[in-house]
Image 1 (cartoon, rainbow, N blue to C red):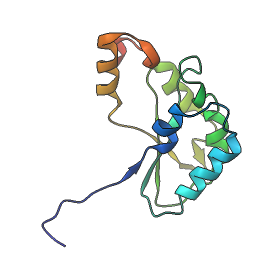
Image 2: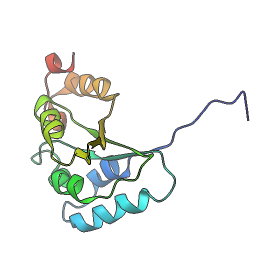
Image 3: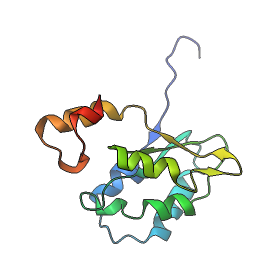
Image 4: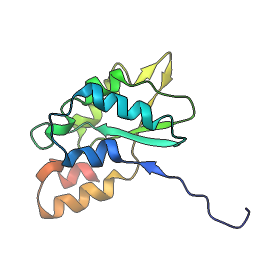
Amino acid sequence: MSGYPKILHTEEGMRDGLQIESPDIPVSDKIRLIDALSETGLKEIAVGSFVSPKWTPQMACIDELVRGFHPKPGIRYTYTALNEKGLERARIHPSAQRAGQRILDPVRHVRRFRTTQQQSHAGPADCSLAWAD
């Protein structure tokens, strides 16, 4: 239908949703969930966050998660990194590319969150205002 805006549904359950759940959920279950979400027709799925396990223990397994899931062509898989250390971990992750193709893309709208988070305290974001600029 022409004249209507295009809508992109981004699945955030693996990143935002799991952060409120027990850190004891097995990585194999998280991998099964990403793979199942990949079969639903979604075009963008947030895989998780490269953050400090001190602040977000649910994301302590992000490296295993990225290595273990099975990306499908046509789906954009994203991650969140709230500081330079997390961004570097994501960049050099051996599974960020498979068969010469990048499978993980950074989330583009993190800057606003980081800046807002810094206004109250470093907290879970653990980043400085200088890095956010």
